[in-house]
Amino acid sequence: MPTPNMFIVYVTDAAASARFYSDLFEMTPDFESPRFITFDLGGGLKLALWSGHAEKLSAAGARTSELCLNVPDGPDAIDRRFDTWVSHGVEIVQDPHDAVFGRTFVIADPDGNLIRVAPVD
Image (cartoon, rainbow, N blue to C red; front, side, top):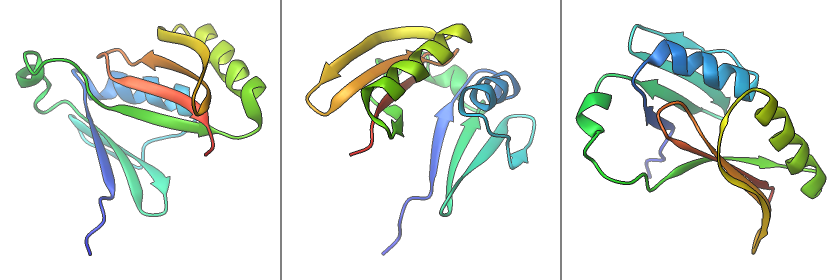
């Protein structure tokens, strides 16, 4: 059975977005071209930033997906991550709060793509 192995995030400037994600997740790209940059997430899974078709997506409607970083070590670790990212100047979409699955918050990348931090299930 085929298994998805890449998440593609549409961005307007792949290089600028790669700097944002590199800083946020403390990782470096494993492949770079002018409009397509990937990060190795381990286990054969990749995160790709693609500026090839972003201009065609402006009328696509509301964002309906998120990247999620699951953080171990409880609510305090999630609040510390929030404070760290705020110090980097990220756009806050949803402040830290307790949801049915635990402590969580949401930020946006420069193109409005959502990134959630939540506890490990």
